[in-house]
Image (cartoon, rainbow, N blue to C red):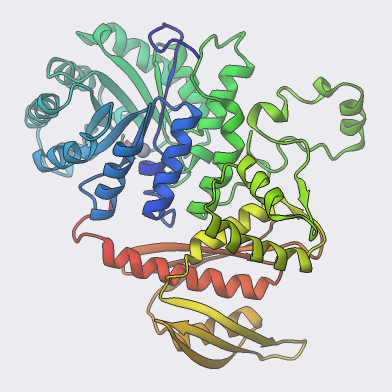
Length: 516
Ligand code: KIV
Ligand code: ZN
């Protein structure tokens, strides 16, 4: 454990559940948010930004639930510079052992123009709202949104006001991923030098990845004096995403010789949480993604493999175990029993009740009958499907038969259970997936647009399961569904229906007037 008060301790502020979840299609259910927050707390994240309480009832309930359940981390909620936002945020975070209110306003010329505030009017608003937050909570973070495109003199002025009004952390967002490492460091150095009272607060960095420089910008800011990095698991976030937690943490660990900073993160938990976030958000991790990509520790070429066999350090700067990657992910086959399944799932971070285990065991056996070797990735896919189905969704795929071949059109014969009753439809299409989606639409008429259809093989071989992600958009609401099966068309049908179910829930829960 590192001492959070020490000068070289860099606090990790995770915003997967706020900035990450806000990215189009990454919606998570209430239970999924609670689960991810639990994993973040166990891994040693210092601050969890749990959501934007005024955005919707769903966000409010998630922040409240996370505040109540969390043992160690500070629980933070986001609020615009409005009294009603700040009060609502406090209502949710007040249940935490360590609550924080994070309030922000866009300070660059472009952002000031939106509410039509003059420089002085905005300065007054900052004073009022930070004071209001501080009267409710001892721990207040303030962010000048689009700081990296704000005039330096104005930035100094408003940060000074926020500090005098009681802010304890000042976050400097690079909202549009515009800065570069040298500039990022330079800005922080000048702010710490010029802002009155800068020595009394912690400076933080929040970098978006539009130019692929988020990690470099965040680390440069640390060298210049920042002691809190805002980041997300897998770099999830709006557009090109945020700084990836796993990248900054491992960079400071592996290159501690030139970046002598510490975090409280248990890095062996990285892989598991990365997989869980990918599963629940529907945002799969690219194979060559640093630290958590499937190929990050794979050595294909002859020269590499030869070197690795002689001395792993020839091509490996960190050990797979450091990020929680087990040496082999081959785990089970059709003769494996319930106890082995429970133990393996435990290693992967899943705690199942007896009923859940029983249900999963049947599905595992069915899979093992079709597939000789069942890998960790297959078990994770099974877990994701069982939590997605939940047994209480409106629409469920019951039976699917497709006829396909070299001659078009292909056809799909589908039975679905809708609100507890079975319905049947047949449709033709350009390929089996198209025919299946048409049959679903015939049974569940909707106006949603298919925004993404993506297929990934979970493991290797022709008997591998395919994970299908489907993203649907309807009237500003976006939902992603996922499913895995050794049959790609079946996985496609279930993913599509899963997205429709989520879309229905999202429409029901969202409060009018705020997209988040
Ligand atoms: O990117 C950004 O500026 C934000 C703020 C709300 C901190 O997410
Ligand atoms: Zn952001």
